Image 1: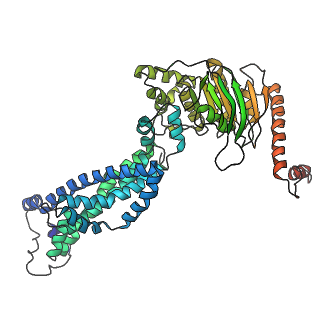
Image 2: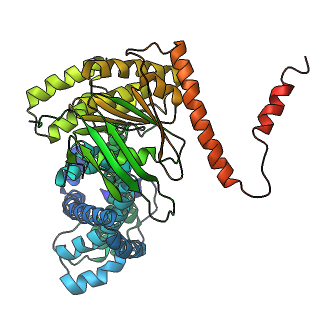
Image 3: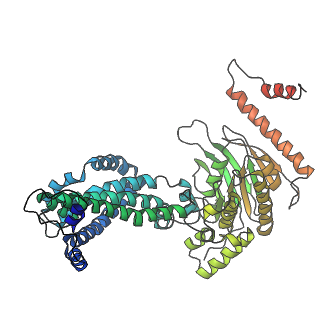
Length: 246
Length: 284
């Protein structure tokens, strides 16, 4: 099916003869349907999605904890912020060798790359967002009797929601890119995600498959942003009266 | 349940506060006793430590020396018995008006049915029952301050502290809120300590006006206002009193300017304004 996408839109002839023939245009519909169902693409998407959900959740947890700690404790901030900013400049594939050496060629290694590629970015934007909470809210909370953990639960964390929503949106694109990179390089694992299909396309010198998988990666990234993270951010911002539409 | 409040006797005793890096005290040796049910307004130029005084009463700032008491108990931390209304309302934008008013009672563990009843009552007192479900950014500036007042009053505080609550509102809304606050005070007879730089505001509302010095902040004069409540804001008594208090503060500002301009160059008093006044209409 992937080959079909490229070849039929005129992406050129296959480069060598080991390549399966282009799909005839008079192919019947049941055949296409069954090809879609049995295509490795479905499985790859599911594998990538599961990895993303698990890895991104871990990233959010780590990012939120680090970000909150940096916001709350000055000494933590002095130490961790430059570190986070530095690690953020490291392209996520650069974590792969370390992942392989520490965890081996397995799922943990892939998750490690994903988390390292996104958690620091989330932490930084979380910290920056929390710092924009007006100090007045804290005073009001104390004045109204919100003390200790209640001040966090009922005042400071709700006040930080816009920061959290924005950092999730940004963090997702980090996470998605890191995952694709990890899957592309770490191909000798039990389950095959989207990145694996991209690597496979390269092995087969199949431009059509390579481009098609790239397009799918872009589309999924955009859909997730448009359907989940952008609306979430917009909803929070509207509630807070922060967006121009409010 | 919220513990029953005392009568509302707020006392500052020889309170001084100096901020880090400043060689001049923000306030120095201030003693002020607000009797239960008294409406005290503190006026003074900026930098006279008005807000510092209020923050000490609220328990947000600890004084360097001296002590603050409410109904005989020393003030050590902020609490709902000394509810404060801020200039920038400080309403929580993620909550509706009603939820904002409810917040303090929720923290105090008041039961849900009682909370609901008291929120409704408080919203009626500030005439905002219809806006209960609105979010903060959907309210006008004046409505926000009324919600902030309701949020403070619903806690049934011993003392109500108000930090320039109407300073960022337009004149018309401000006058409306002066009437509203005067009504509320007549109904509840809370002790109110109100800070402002507006003399007009002070003479409209106060039983007693406290005029502050600046650099360092000290009490310069106390003026009792014997006019009965509710007051007519455009009466000649009020205007006369406002002139008196204004003069008091102008003297104070002049004194400060005098201290700051001790060099050889000293501008004529209001020279520009005088020249301008002479020119007005001259060309007609």
